[in-house]
Image (cartoon, rainbow, N blue to C red):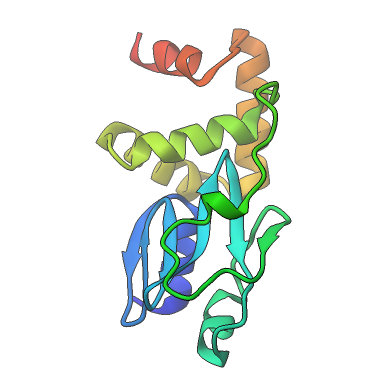
Amino acid sequence: MTNNDVVQQFERGLSGKSLNMESNGLKLWSYNTVVGQWIDGKLVKNITKYSQTTTKQTTHLDYDNVTKQHVPINTQDLTPYVSRPSETSEFNGEALLNSIRGLARSQGFYGRMLNSMYETHENEETIIMLLDELIEAEGLKTSLDFVMLVEG
């Protein structure tokens, strides 16, 4: 697996590993430092300049405009460097997709669902739009509502 493959897997909430990069679906490491992490449904990118190699590895990381600098090398968690959003976050297709990513890490059913979504639809924006439509059509208010819908 190439570094770019690992980044793509991470963006989908999946695991992957190359010689110097690794993803567990929630965090992305370059060598021994977290350079990307899903926090509160947002992809946070550590833009601290450690080396040319690390900068090159993360060039294609598509993040949610949340970047952090001055993160010490060998940091294993970006959470302390991020301001937490208010608890009144809107439940929408993007939030639901991030919930599915989280479920996919431990539940095979949701992993297969996530892979199927990416194989079936041309881009993530389409997936989010379809999830928005599902939320509206079914009157979903939380991720738990979605789980109850699909697991009945």
